[in-house]
Image 1 (cartoon, one colour):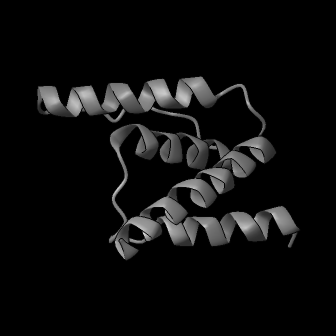
Image 2 (spheres, rainbow, N blue to C red; image 1 turned 135 degrees about the horizontal axis):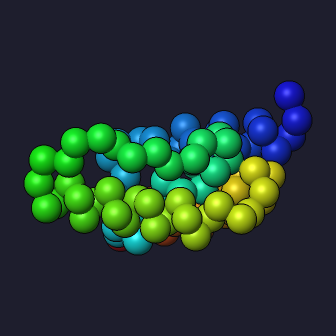
Length: 96
């Protein structure tokens, strides 16, 4: 396994911790870079039952749209950077 792939997998494990809470804009960046890194493209989710679901779906589509032109390698690197910056911040806040 390539070093980048291994670092990406480790970053995903760290970011997947349900105890970590991030602001919505950071969560959307994680989502978009993860989807792009995995080679996924956004597809319509089908039936949307509420205005809130429609809004969330719209934000997700926008995040993916903004990340669509970066390479899979760059998406992995950006995801790793997000983890490095934001998880260390969250861990520092817990220590305070």
